[in-house]
Length: 132
Image (tube, rainbow, N blue to C red; front, side, top):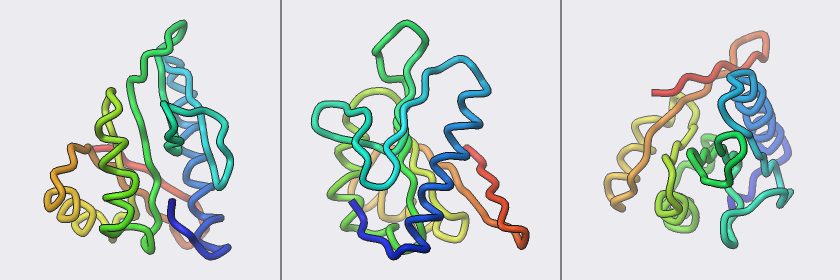
């Protein structure tokens, strides 16, 4: 788990909240969140930021981990991303758009199977999320 300063943690948790709200509108999945230091829902002994299951099922369909610019690094890849990519379901890494190429290079270097999403913050402090 990354140790972020207050501002980065606040942004991280806002991205989790917005991603969860957007995914819940879809109604095809139950969305479980683990913002900040909260351990609300786990898979084994791991607590990814977002876990999606189909309605009436505990089968994990998607695992989404949110990163900020300061947490796109080899340490996170080895301590979290690798494990999340092996849990079953599809693993998405949601990173700042400016960190996308770095995240891809790190995942390739360590053999991490992942799909990517990116997020941006505009001048009005609005967060936009895009999945690939």
